[in-house]
Amino acid sequence: MRVNEDAVLRGQRVLLVPYEPHHVPRYHEWMKSEELQKLTASEPLTLDQEYDMQRSWREDGDKCTFIILDRGRWDQGCPEDQCMVGDVNLFMVDPENPSLAEIEIMIAEPMSRGRGFGEESVRLMLYYGATTLGISTFQAKIGEENLTSVRLFNRLHFTEESYSSVFQEMTLRWEVTETERQWLLDAVHVSAESYREMKQNRETDAHH
Image (cartoon, rainbow, N blue to C red; front, side, top):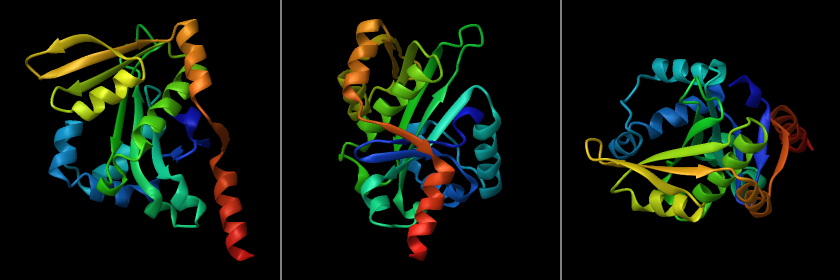
């Protein structure tokens, strides 16, 4: 999605940055994992296909994605690809209803799980969707065995909307009422900045 191509959301633990071509090799390595393929219901892609997918995330108006960086590692000066821990996505699933989006979260790095990165990333994405993209209803489709994700979304006020015995997954839903919007704004510690400027500042610091 073009709207977030220069957007960075800086939280307390994570940075959400746009998905760029230089992220693809690391992302491609992640997606060789059978566990992640199963959790994300995705097929393994070639590296060329992964670059095509990255371009579609950038160009398509019905998809919004951010790569999740470990802010602590970034602040210590680690190379960007070594700060990557996962991604968070929004899909505009209904052309008739542009205010409805499906949200997905993946913490791909095993060492980065259980550290609050996933929850903060979802909070930031809900904030971005509600305040910038005009989303008023969020859905999350989660396999019934993925109890960690179910608990995460329950903490964020999502409730079960439906269950598919065929796919063995539940659909959770969150409506952005005025009360819920205020709760979200109070719960999120975020600053927005330019990705290009963030990278330039890093390069400037490196030369000093």
